[in-house]
Length: 98
Image (tube, rainbow, N blue to C red; front, side, top):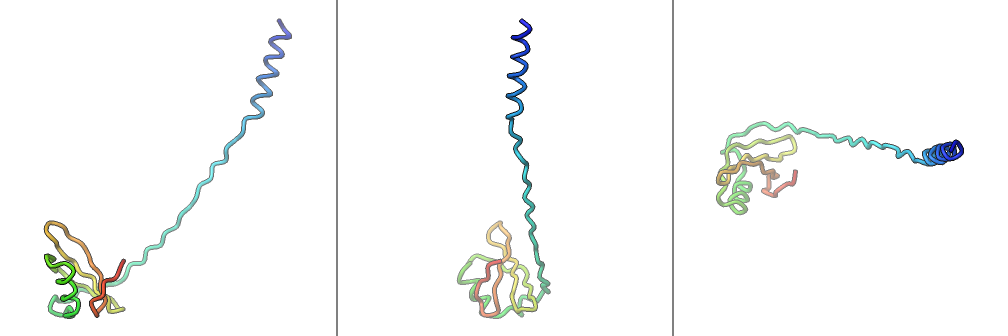
């Protein structure tokens, strides 16, 4: 009986030595956000090309506010139905993805 218990202990002990430890790896993702400085402009100062592009692409859009940055890119706060959002365009009326 002693040999049976001793052999069982040896077998169980040897099985536990083969257990593998899974290494935990943590990936650090660093994101950088740049915030551009926009200054508000009057709606009358928005170029005609941008207003035409807005009416052509979004006929039901209402322009609430307009902003400009140093690169002459415009940020437009618009309302379409019950949704509000931002659109970006350059001074020639071409849409910019941001």
